Image (tube, rainbow, N blue to C red; front, side, top):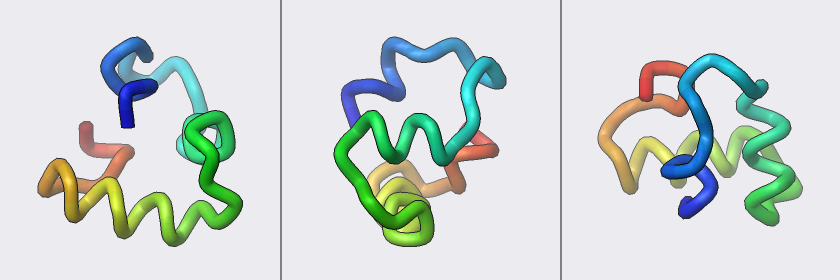
Length: 44
């Protein structure tokens, strides 16, 4: 999740961020992101 702190909003696809963060499943990344931050990655 540290990558989200260093990424400008709207500059990368959620899938790109998920894979760069070590997630192999974008849906799982979305669920974990929502759990950690209280919103979907696209809303962050």
